[in-house]
Length: 181
Image 1 (cartoon, rainbow, N blue to C red):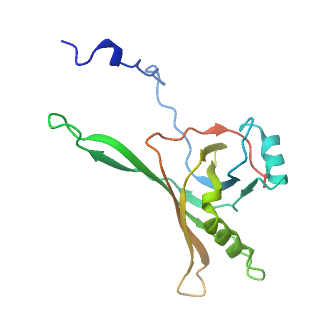
Image 2: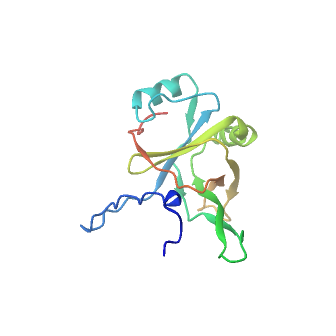
């Protein structure tokens, strides 16, 4: 006996391995891209378009970061007395530390203050160490503050979190952004 009518059964996804082994992805997020809310990419995989967007001040990159994306936080809700809870939402986060500094002019502080104060006017994404861009996220929240370690051999750095809501995982686009921005 079928659990659902044929009209409700979506096609199954294609298997990525075909039983021939495992291919892994490299970790590490190297930098963020902040994009003006009214800018639309024609070809997000085009390095030339990224360079032009930076030149026209439609995109700005952070400096190199120490960043990660841990597993999202899922929200479940019981929507039927006769069934288990269903997944209804997910909050995603990227946590980061930024060790870039400009102690004489405070451009580092100005950069993060501007991003925080205007985040609703920006879109966001991240670039990984293996050359993939993940995004664009249209609505995100950001919290960032500087941390001053407790001794002279320590550092002052920015510690932050960027959060967004999306049940789906982002898929990366291969693009060489090394040296752009």
